[in-house]
Every structure is written in C-alpha cells, then in structure tokens.
Image (cartoon, rainbow, N blue to C red; front, side, top):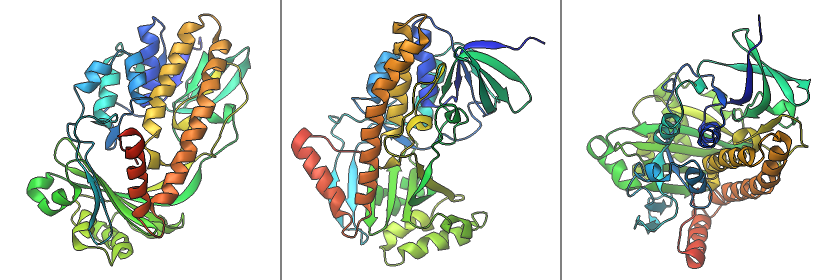
Length: 387
C-alpha cells in the first residue's frame, strides 16, 4: 500500500492552525489540517477572546477576514469592572467603542476560519500519536487508527501537550501554581440578575490575595466564570467534580469571607464545574532550526492567560508562517528560519508579561495591582490592558 504524502501537514485545527491554512489558501498553497476531534462541534470552544489590534487583528487582515470578524464582534464586550472581595467597585470602564481589543466568542472566530477554507482541508478524527524524521526535511507521521503519512513540512499547532514538539524541543509545560474552576450561568439577566449586575456588560475582575473570580458576559446573555486559586497542583485531585454540590463547596471554602454576590457566581452556577490547571512552557522557549518542522501557538509558547496573549499570538503565528512560506516558494527552510526569527522574541516578551501579570493579580494588596496597571496604561495609551 502506498503511504499518503501531504506537502504541508498542520497538526491541530485550533485558531493558529486554521489561520495558517487560510493564509496559505489565499496564496494558492494547499495544506492538510489534522485534528483529533470527530467534528467541529465535538466540544465547546471556550469563552470570549479580546482580539488585539497589533497581533490578532493583523493576522485576520492577512487572512482576508477582518471585515467578517468585525461583523461578529460582541458589542459592549470591552467594558471592564474591578472589584475587591467585598464587592466594592475599585474601577469601572465602559466600552465606548474606541478600544483596540474587541471581544468575540472563540467558537464564532473558529467558525469564521473554518468557513473560509475549502471543504476537505481539515481531516477530522485524525489523532496524531507521533512523528519521526526521514531525512531531507521529510517526516513520517503516525495516527491512532494505525495509519500514517509522510510530509515535506510538519507544523505542530497541537497545543500544550503537542505530539510534534519533541521533534524540536525537550521542554514540557510546568504547573504555574494557579488552578481555575470554570462555571457558567445561563440567561443571566433573567435567571441570575444579581450576578448579571455584578459582572456588568463585559469583563469582571474580583480579586483578593491568592484568589480571584474572573468573569465575562457572552453574546447569548450567559456568564462565563473562572474561580482562580493559588493552590498546589494536586488540589484539584481531591475534589469529586462528578458531585457538583461537593465541588461548589470545595471551591467556595476559598471564598468564605467574600461578599455573597461574588460567591453566587459559583454557588448558583448552572451545570457541572470544570477544573483546569494552568501550565506554561519556560519563558523564552525556543529551539534550533530543525529541517521540515516547526511549531506555532501553545505548542511553541504555552503561557498563562493573564496577559490575554495566547489566542492572539496563535493567530499571528499562523499568519506569519503562511506569509513566510508564500514569500519563499520552493525554499521551506528559508521560510521557517524567517518565521522563527520573529516568533521567538515576540513569544518571550509575551510569556514574561503573562507571568508578571499573573503574580500581580493575586498579590497581597489585590486588586490594587490591577487598578494601578489599568490606570498607568490608560495614561500612556488611552486603552486598557487585557487579562
């Protein structure tokens, strides 16, 4: 049996991998995208994303999707409230439409990218289990179903626990010291009016020492909530998340002295709670040039979410890699070298910012650090930072 060959194989149909495929398609270059999910609807895609003018929006312009992106933006989503643990408002900023970071639902953005690709570009239900070099920049990729294929360019866009990363780096993500427990309140204005008022029209930061409640309003009127805790890595293992009541109680023990209106964001949540440990690759993660393979997005520079850069960098990575390949026809190695030369310093700076802001959010005088950051940023640029 002849082994299939894909000139360009992208592992992972997340935002970065799809942006790469879209930019390549716009330049007449075919790519095959493989994803472990059985279909685009196999799982929810998370909450809201703020798309930055100097990264994510640049990528969407390169992909020819900027106007369609604007049509899907969540109006009012840039409004921000900062509260302390007693629900006192420390800062409040409306969305006046002038900010550079409009909000969009992650699923809507992924749907936009998927819809811009020719049918059949994404091969669903294709779980990559490993890859090995064949020489001259070619690789053989193995799949969970026993199949395999070869490729002239292998791109790891497969997230935190990338199967492609070991080809270029021994680095593995490490626990950052923070865990999230995710909750959702549906039809908040009707079913949870107190919580709806607390969160406001956009983003909420309710912060205290070593903990916080982060929430945002979604276009459908729901509230997406993250209880963030500075806890040992094994803390989540001691909670039975199949027992939603017990899970709520375990989380709320860490907010025992917080205002009732804030505790309700967890206490009144609809459906089960979802645990998430926050991992990151080392700040400054990079690798020596390896023929025929590279990484983008979380596979390349997984970082904490506290600077709001992860999705934006994945978009920009995908766009810049696509543009580099289009600018160096027939010379993949020159394209990869040019791409990585820009990737590494950009990712290092953002990862350092993310780690610094994570430490700042939950320090002993929280939320003062975030108030100071917003105030200082507004004085310089007139815009608010993201977390």
